[in-house]
Length: 390
Image (cartoon, rainbow, N blue to C red):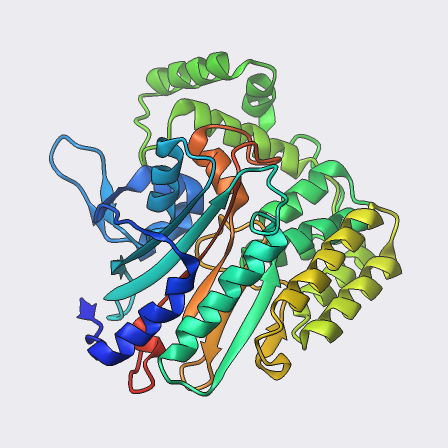
């Protein structure tokens, strides 16, 4: 496993100092994290990027790939209405089919606020701008002069989808795959297809008519009769729910060509923020038929967000609304600070808003989120260091 070199003490101190204005409480997280929980949150496809550890007789764990989930769990366990947490320590990522598996140093911040907090400090737009500005300052503190702040928004995609006037099941399916390019491409390729007569067969139809505990019990009975032993840590209730969801998705109608073309154009936007936002407005008006007010409200939020980012040179910002991350629990702002020398695949800093993660960790409904608001950032000091490579 490749271990990133240590950042010179003077450079690391400057990067730390750039995050100090946040006034965060220093926290740590266990090196070992529950594997099944992370897979539930980020998807089974992420397993190949994790270092999996299993002690005899114990559930599978993994070396922490980052701190966000662990810090969010800690915040919920405290029962606090709000919190600001900073951390520093090693994280670990595997790399399938290559020798690029690595241990690397992360610095990060996670900010939490109550769901109804609309004060200046608690407004999600203000908090978004604060965390993106801090990420920019920390990245720049390493000495690089070739940085650009890339801005995206998973929530803006959801509002744009609403503006298209799509059937509810189809809109929900598109929002679920927004951060997964291959799945979204497959959805766009279904243009004009008729919905399946029965997307999940008799089993899905049977499970969909039962309360969750009964559906789980029936699935366990089927497994026992067939001699099947489930793997991967998924419980019968979760598997039953997924079968039902996939069946419902398969029965949803496909996009029209005009709708698919509008989505492709949205996903392709990569402009200065002002130009990019105007393109989104034009696309929403061009197809229409849906909830245009939600899109306009989301765009107005972006106008306010950009005003709050006034300390960042306009020429150093780029707006790509489809910007996503490997961990797909983000549901609002997403951002990356990129170095021209390192390229898009190796961001110096990244982060975004993940309100829904709190509800998922707390067992509540992810949308709307009853548990609060959350936004955070992570910085890779070695990448920020002007003398470093990644």
